[in-house]
Length: 123
Image: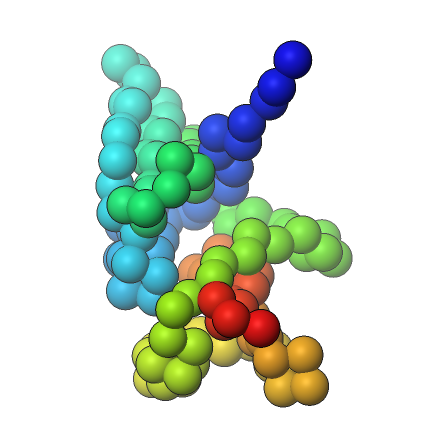
């Protein structure tokens, strides 16, 4: 028996704002979308055009307040081929929330407060 990772889900408060962030900050593109027939939710699957892994953004129509992420101890990690260019982009976007230069990595924060780790491809 063999399992493979398909996707990771995160709920978002403002779908358009999140789609813009993931496109600008990480180059992710919409791969698939599912909308409830009654308009109660929208699922958007984002991909990197390289791997089969997807991030599923879930937007719920009746959600009235931003999500409480608690201690926000989880994250999704991204490997980038040009770490310096990525760092410059994220600095310009103002989304770097934590940096560990000794370990050679940093985190960016999406519009809902989720942290995303950025690692160089060669460490």
